[in-house]
Image (cartoon, rainbow over all chains, first blue to last red; front, side):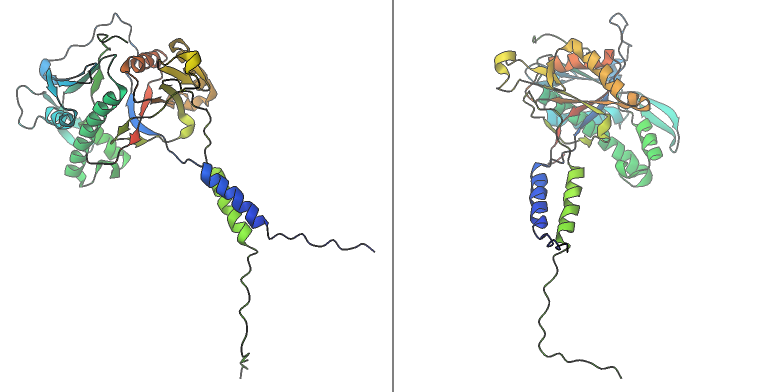
Length: 189
Length: 157
């Protein structure tokens, strides 16, 4: 006669599983990478000449190695950069000093005025990365605010609630034009 | 007519806990799948700056990470305190960056090769010189999508 083996007590599996669970709970970092997305311009050999733009179409943003910000040659605080950029790009009063506008036909919008303004960002090699990100952040904020404005005018919704086609149309009306000049090396390193 | 039993005082039976392990296992599997273990051990200080306009990086498989920062104290003896680039598990020079980009491209499927995003995880104390050099190298390697890694800052504007 074969003796029946007694059933193994399974009541502790719960405890074991809880232990494992606790381990994974403790070690999990569900951090999602986030940041400011940019697209670099393709590489150009040194001898190619930079295209020329009219002075009124350029907003010159300079950050020096002491982390000071200058907009069109005047010292300014980072927090003012967003409003300055919006005013510059939109040029609401058609000021002679601010960028020209070009009428373009864009899908879903029809003929609209598109600003020719370009933000030219120049940083020094000694500029701290934190300051650089703060500036980039302000510029991104300016563009996203303008895009939200256009989206609200047209569809009564914020930019991120639009469909992809609508977003593309808004992007065409407010193109993100941030140009980064070749770095200067004044501060060294 | 149905007969209703009036059983007097009946003790409520104990709730069976037999399914408890199953529930816990389910949770366990969820966390095991959702967890992403950090693949590289950081050899540089890496406190990223904060920004308000951050967007999340979709598709983790298409992101290649470039770490920049001061070597951590364990590595300062050998590598000094100047900011350095870390690729995968070792320190790298600027010249190696193009080879790294090529290797990252090679590791992806052919249709994904042009949509790799370079995630620049740069320490906030680093100066722009090294960042600009990296950007120049990336342009030369024709890998143009970049992401300035930063933490979401919650606050006004």
